[in-house]
Every structure is written in structure tokens, then in C-alpha cells.
Length: 221
Image (cartoon, rainbow, N blue to C red; front, side, top):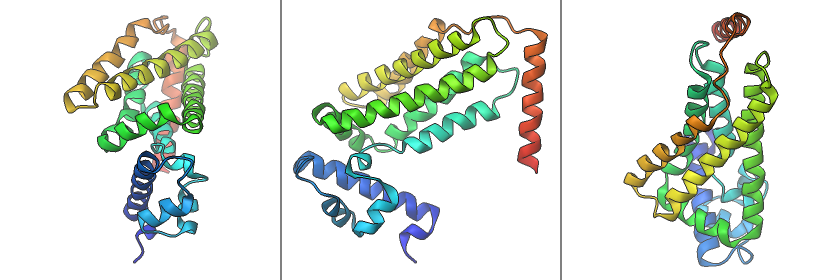
């Protein structure tokens, strides 16, 4: 059976393509590397490459779609009584796993993004997607809070900025296992800076409980 016919196989093919792209960009150069080069190094064909990535600049990125899905899942499944700042931190921390699963590739990717403008642009676009997701999720939960939209926008921007700052700091310091723990600790410092401490009214608590009930009904159906 071909690798791409199972979830595990597709994940393996994707990892092989990312590793091949990062290694080739590092050794051969970004402009000098073609999609065919990456596909051949990963042991697949050109058509298979395009099932996973739109272009070679996408092949060097972590699986950001997975990261975005993890964040959305944390918000959707959070208990209605959990403090919002806790939900935000938990959601953001799931993205660290995209880098911790293959530290060597993460280090090479970090160096490449600094050197290649096309890769920097790609990462900037992804930062915007993360910020927009956090802002949207928070806006829904702060709809009845004074200045809720402003709080959501500020929190979304702050969380993503703190996450990126902690991650870059860890990668620049060598991306060690000990440093990974410090990376998370450093990121969590943003908690006290977030404008999420407005007291919840009865209507807001009721709304959260109703949303949780709807989520449970959807999961059980």
C-alpha cells in the first residue's frame, strides 16, 4: 500500500518533503532548488508534492493548518468556567509542538527564514492567520464585555507576538530540550499583560454554558 493512503502515511510523506526541502534549501540554496528536486529527495513524484504543498515556499513551513485546527479545538472544547486567559495560553502552547517534534529541522528552518525573503513573507502571512483566529474566538467570548472587540484584538496580537518572541528566542539559543521548557515559561509571562480580567456577568456565564451544551450535543450526534 502506498504511504499516502493512510493518515500515518500522509504524515510521513509530508515530513519527508519538509525535511528534503529544508536540507536542499540549506545546502543548495532556495532559488537553485526546484520542486522536482524536493520530490526526488523525498522519494515521491512531482504530482505527489503538489498534493501537499502549493509551492516550494510552503514546503519549508511547519503544518500551520494543524496548528490552527488545534487552537480552534481548544477554544471549542474549553469548559465554560475556565478562565479565558487559561484557555488562550493552552491554545497557543499547542503550536509549540509543531517545532518540538523535529528540533533539527526547526533550527534549519529558522536560519532559512532569516535569509530568504520569500520564506519571511510566508511566515508573516501565517502570523496574520493566527492573530485573526485568536481575535475571532475571543471576540465571540467577549461580546458582552465592555470594549470586548478591543480586548480581543489586543489579546490576539499580544499572544501571537509573545509566542513568536519566545519561539525565536529558543531557536536562536540552539533549540535545546532545556530551552524548550524555558521557552514555554517565558511565553506564559504574557498572561499578566492581557486585558481579560473584566468580571463576568450572569448573562456571559449563561451564554458560555449554552455554548458548551451545544458543543456536547454536536459531539454526541
